[in-house]
Amino acid sequence: MKYAHIILVLLCCSAAALSQSRDYATNSEDEIIREAQQIDLRIDALTHMADRRFAVLKIDVAAPAKKENDAWGPLPEGTRLQLLDDIRRIVQKAIDDIDNLAERPQSMQLDTTHPNQKPKTYQELFPSSVKKLGAAAKRWEPALKIEAMKTKDPVEQGMIANTIDLCDQIIEALAKVK
Image (cartoon, rainbow, N blue to C red; front, side, top):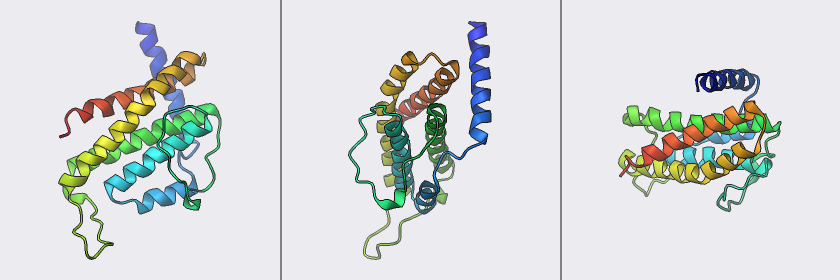
């Protein structure tokens, strides 16, 4: 068991080195994320970004049908390992965004683009955003577990195990949201 833990740490370190050489978002996706300042919109964008990578990898995660417009740009490219790392980093970004807002609710951006509508509050948007991310994690986790069993590559196994752990964290957090 001691060696398994050491191997997992080494795999995560090599994955971290891999991730430093490449951005996990395309230029078009970066622009969408920059524009999605409100947490619910940002979570929608991040989950769609992960779903796009699963689609490129031909991993069925039962993604909801979403008409993709030209703003998203071409599908992301990369090796299997790069796309798996992108997914891990996107999920981590979503967690970080939720955590940051939970720590500083007053920093939430309000949508004031509709002058005749009252902007939604933190109390309205935060729980629904966590639930959206949790629903995505529940879709992704079974597919990731299947992929982990299929692959013989220890680096891929470590990357997938790390993403499964992130999904578990999200699902656990769901239980705390009302």
